[in-house]
Length: 245
Image (cartoon, rainbow, N blue to C red):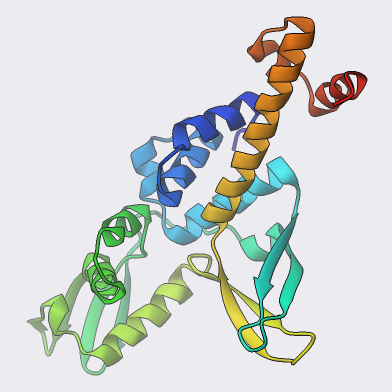
């Protein structure tokens, strides 16, 4: 993984402007893994993608993440910290084309983990249920019952539930859930953590701050943007302080 520079951050933000969080995540990974094509990165399992995004986040901003939520019971605001190392766990090392099997309710199903291409396809669905059905159809490679081929649409709900559980087992970082407890009413609940959206927001804030520094320093010293971005963060901040910014 390449260490992202200030110029990389600005370029990622610029190219990702107006794109979905899924495509923004691909842009981040394309900069961090320049030897891999965008299509290869889109085909990473969601767990692999998220683990890589957490590693990129750690290299840019450190291992601690500050997050915010509200109690589902009393509405109390709750601020909490997360660790990228804990969230990332062991980086998934399986092949992007890995396939798995499950047996349930007399059905034998072969499937693959979900990837970014699947999320893009599901995002065009008009309802959540339609998106869920499409994801099942895309990840199931084949299904049989008593050695007879069965259409994905014919799989009963109980088998689909088992499939959801197996997807989580085979690709554990695909869906990151944070367990929270309210300090006021002691209500406990879980919230999903989307590293793609979280990191995208952080990169946007950082890129805009960098461009402001470029604006101030270029006006003061007539330096080029590339030269300002090539400075270390400490040197840019020192020059900004000398200018009273």
